[in-house]
Amino acid sequence: MVFSQHYLSSKSAIFGWGWAGVDIFFVLSGFLITGILYDSRQKPHRYRDFYIRRTLRIFPLYYTLWLAILLATPIAQWQWNWRWALWPAYVGNYARFLFLHQPGDPYRFVRITFGPLVQGWFKSPMNLYIGHFWSLCVEEQFYLLWPFIVYTVRKREALIKICLGVIILMPLFRWLLSVLVSPQMLRMELFYRSLPTRLDALLIGGLIALCLRGPEQAWLRQWRRWLLVAVAFLFAFTYFIAMDIMHLPFYGSATNWVGIIGFTWIDLFAAALILECIHPGSTLGRVLSLRPLRSLGIVSYGFYVYHDLFHDFYSWFGNRFFPAHAFAVTTISAFLCSIAISAASYKLLEQPFLKLKNRFTDQVHKTPSV
Image (cartoon, rainbow, N blue to C red; front, side):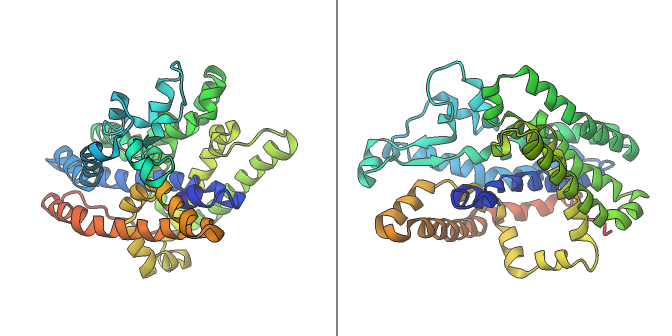
């Protein structure tokens, strides 16, 4: 979905909703991480095991990429400054908001521009696009917060109340922010890209993980499809009221009403999708378990990291050699190359580190079936 947002949205409005794929990712991540944390809350080395396993999964690819960017400096002649360090520090999602008081393009922190040498080779401005790393920053910030809450509170019922409280209050919090912050910050997707405003997505996933580990599981089993239908209706109804009755402007993920309440409906829909997928005998579960999709899932972290990184190179290739079909060639090249790069990255870089996770086996996710 995110790939379609970056490569296909100019051709069809439906692909412009690809940003919602990040919401599904947040809900799924909250579901998996909360399950791991709750199941290991009594383990003696729970903090050590959790952070070591997360480090082995996330850091090798991410920091190897930044090391490669650093080593490429003599040839690439990157036009950057110290503020790019926000990204390796996992706070780059706030970069576009921190320097609005300074003149210049506010979106300059979502790309790293090549210097004259490379631009001379291609006779075109060339960039590395890193803006999509913002969601990795949100995830990492969540990992620093949520384990301490789960391991301190421990009681399932109390954790459920925390999740429900955040989920219920978050639309009100985002509405309050919409009144207090500048319109420019809202248009630059403040609600979409910051942890405080995305906690409900992560905790909706956490909520269903906790409910599946208690008597609420029976209710979820019985009502999962009705939840799917109800949330889809609520979003459609909200969209109708906002667009056709109130004639509010629409800017995708930067739209006020989407940020205030639309995110919640999308996230609840994602939670219902997860419940349906893990239900025994689910048609959707069987479809998503097909081998090609499972293979893509295995390398999905790398695919996400790499897919938009070389966007300008794919575009240059399509326009340079296939001008009559530049759009199609750009998109196909980006998809196939991203698959190839992420598969190689997984095999050569990520997998050796992932094997080390077996030394910390107290924290393995066990999905309760519904």
